[in-house]
Image 1: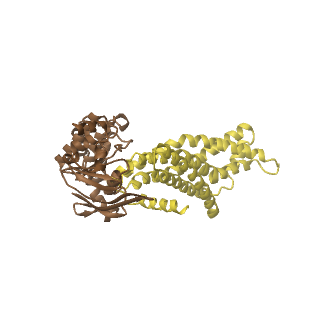
Image 2 (image 1 turned 135 degrees about the horizontal axis):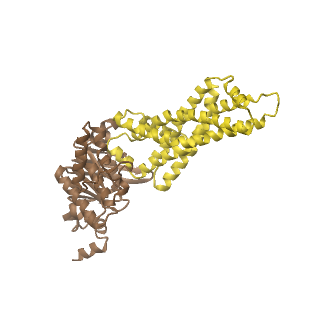
Image 3 (image 1 turned 120 degrees about the vertical axis):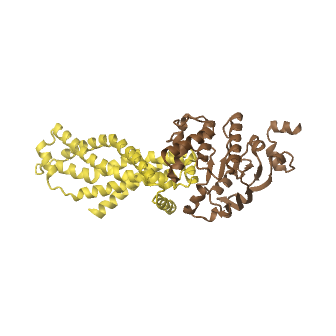
Length: 244
Length: 249
């Protein structure tokens, strides 16, 4: 049951990575998509990151009941959990909702209104023209969004922790700068790139094979978000298992 | 000239096209007519490669399209212009960008040359000055005309038109039909129109193929169609009260 769609997905990807007809037209599309995916998602990523950091700090402080554990651990836990899990994974799940549904409905609408057929008739490789710029834009902008998310998450945690008195500024900064392993950033970036690829390619696949009308476009969009989220969480586990 | 030989197409259990063969001459409006579900649009899509027939060949001036791969088909596809039933204009582009899109992709013309071509095509379909409008701002008839302008942008040798009059009022439908016929004569294109509109049939049907239950049931001209004794074709042609009244006269 899973093999038929998987095979179609792989064949679609093969068509996506066929040599473009004209690079300069693709380049324009890539920049356009970078603005749409990257700049367009900055607001939502900023908001969720600040709150994620704040909540993580407050809840970690709540669980530290032993006097033997220094308060600086809060900063350390926030740093590592933001880098390794919260920023890449939660951002990806949110972006699957925002970017994934947009990609699926955009391509799905083009399918049901025969715009994709029009591209094919003109002799244009429609998977390449429609999907490749989105994938390239996502794998370049989503890691940047994740880096911004890490920064804002730590900032949010810092303000929430110090404002509530859960941790002092000095303890928090000590925790942030103690025992930092730069390999966690590598893991984070690997996750970001893979999640970006999953969000755009899975959503584009759902949109590209939409048939019917407006109702089916909505269903494709929903499926794109659900399948992307599951694929993100599954690959999150696989990456963690392989790299850590 | 386009030649189709023994085209078969099946969707699941449904054998939609059952061995259709025909020839479509250049410089003529060739019409494919038939009732809903008779296989007209499927045949058109098989001819342009949007569907792959299980059997049979589609031959463009001696070149067998069905035996070609994606790369070699591009040469023929750049010679094809197509007007879709819903116009299929790109929503994110304005009228001008829609028209110059195929030129951008397949030529190295300067920006001025491309604009000149877009303006020429727009003038040809009586939409001069509408360059910056978006598809959402156009009426149904205007969308069809922009669709035609885009279809002729690359000087096609083959023009395919799917239900050009659907959703249009009779007057606009005649304008579109006349435009298709003028362009066919002007550019000597091999034009294939899929329709079930009797006004089109009588107006521009120089060569007509009638499909019924996935088979070619009848072939002739618009002059011959009203005097045929083919039962199924008569039921199709004289289905409306208006045509029945004409028949009585």
